[in-house]
Length: 323
Image (cartoon, rainbow, N blue to C red; front, side):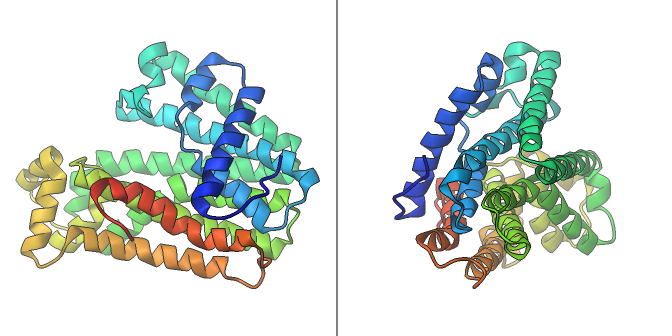
């Protein structure tokens, strides 16, 4: 059933979570897949359905949009299975990662089956949907490969002479790994609503901006919890101008968040401010896109404007921040 009552994005989001979870239970009967899907926030399906409604999707097309939402979540959860294996993470969504329970080989294959099922859904919705799915999945894989290379050669990268290049690579990874799936979710919602091409492309750009803001917020939370990942690159570039000695690098790996924050403070820069400034830039751009006259003037247009800030704040309020 389409969502009829629209007030705040929070209410919309909770409604979508319930509807999508019900659809997952109807469509998925594999226990391992259900385990991997359990506990997800369902942000990307929510953005797909929001874009669908914002583009005046009809009631008769709503079922297809809901199916696409399930497909997006299948693909996202499959990528997390593989991420956990590559990163050596043993917990996901508050419970043991799938590879811990089933073994690495089985978890890889389960992830592939989820991707296959997601692709089948997109193919059932037409060649255009299938092509978009394949392009997005390829972007996600390229982003993951870049991430692996980025982390493996971190010392070499940090000791390079081109910090601007480093920063570009950081954003490229974000765009490929995270923003591409948000962009595709919003684009898919517009396609299911049979929106004109210009509006469909606008929804894609909107989703990309939301995805970048979300990933930056996620990186900031990791940094503040002392987790050393590619999210540290932005402040490191600003502090050290591309030069980090080996001893400092080892200290950063051990207690990155604290050391970076202290180094920034000594240089008169606040770690949070660097990220918040960048996050705000992408939120503002998303709101600007959501304000386009191409989007019909309905309550859902207002939710498009509200969504980016809500999504980011839900992430960063765990470290006591609000934008």
